[in-house]
Length: 522
Image 1 (spheres, rainbow, N blue to C red):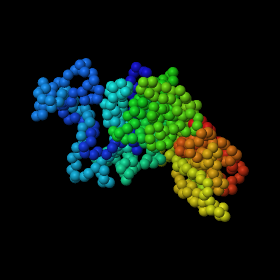
Image 2: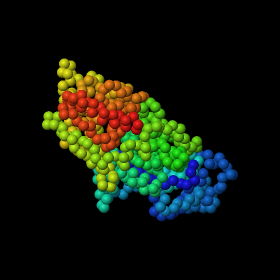
Image 3: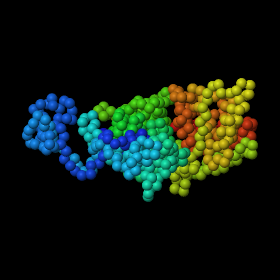
Image 4: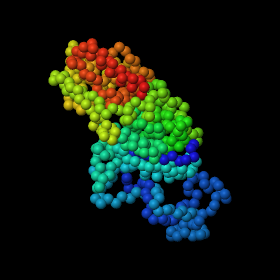
């Protein structure tokens, strides 16, 4: 483990259970900050049922609490309680009964409860974790391992009062209470890349810990693996149980992530990250490309694709181990980092009936940052057997699928792509579905086939016009296709996408080959 403490930027992201807390209810103990220093009398030998077993080896009490509330240096009655004096410092957090004093007398938990349960950034969570004991019985684990700077990028809680006036669904993104949920839009991917890229490029931090909701962090981490040009570790964390709640897994995951960074196990001989963005959860280190949440419980994360994905493990006593490195491109070796993207790409817009036209999408602003309005739309079409009506040639289904696609092409200002989540291993769909998607392909829309569910191998590349998603899930294929569209743009459309010429078919195949290369390497 390195002798110099690393400086870690902790980024609070959206819908992060790891930064959520149970609702504040009067009575239960909650960490609260002591306003003034004080001395409290604690019952002697009450920290553990076996303390009294030490007998004479344990120091005696500081006094005896009598029935009238005074403390006597000697026992005066059988009812006296042996106590020790403990000095509590002002400003420190201690578990104390929560006593709300609302101005309007509301009760917690109602639909109109204005309080947010998420932390605005991770500083409070890290302070509380640092006060907890490690397995060796000592506290201060986080501060002993690293220094931290706390950053908000698409956070889960918002400062809604002046002067900040942050807006739900634009500046912050909670999932609780249910009627106040907020989901980031496509442009948020650009914000995430730009802000983390600037943070890492500044040279003031050695690594990033990124905190997000457990159901979606796998997509964000893979996006960062594709678009961030960095040689610093990026470690993702999430939780299945809110912070402060019984059985919360977030604190352990966070400590394990700091151990991972501080150990230097992710670095090569030149001190550069060799693993790429990872999710550290339940003592395992997952590569961002392969990790997926499969259940809302401990151990509910799995490596997808059937060919690895778990790159190492973390344990407080046994240390940090990185044993499996992928040959896939990521971060500084990725072909999709912002610096490697062109200034402009082609997009297609219009309708078949009135003609498709080619436009230009500006990818980056004057400062070289990814534009939020440039992030492409990528649709996911999922195959299932038994969909068409008998004797109709699936005309209604064809029209519905094409209408969905054309709604995105009509008036489009950025490229469009489609992921077909077809049958396992092959990525095939019903012939009528493939016919509609082939029309979309010749209308300039790259189509990528992925297998349904969590496949354990590669989608094969048969003699058909779509690209193959390698061993990616459809969710991860969508992320890679989004980044690839920023690199390559839309395909050149055929004059009549329903009846392309042989030369137009070959041109489409040649252009789609560049997409296939990106899927083969990332």
